[in-house]
Image (cartoon, rainbow, N blue to C red; front, side, top):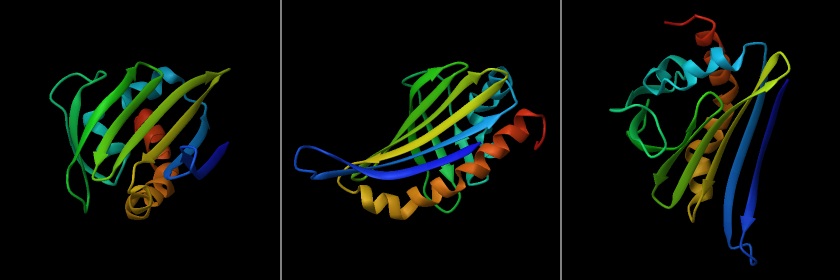
Length: 158
């Protein structure tokens, strides 16, 4: 079961500030305990996301920890972990000129299966610019990224 949802929403009583949100859900037979070690091992994300050249993190992942992520074809990004709650929740923040970008991955047990929820939110005066630059592309690649996450969790892609 895969569901996509993307939309703009507006903040403030006068609708002056636009924010953008995209969410994705994926149901899998893999247990949370098999998926989390891959998701929580931030330095190995280039195995999971073929759009990432490298990740540099100098300490154990935890809320407040900063790291650097280098996508192919773009400058290195400064990231900060917002929530790190093994084995269920990971979220981080990237501050860009004129916008903040929040990424979140949540794992939930649903009977014998796991529901993976991923979302991205871009918020700030330059929201529409950043959605055009990378938001829609990131959203379009989230299904493939999730499938690669599961392949790595099953022991593939080294």
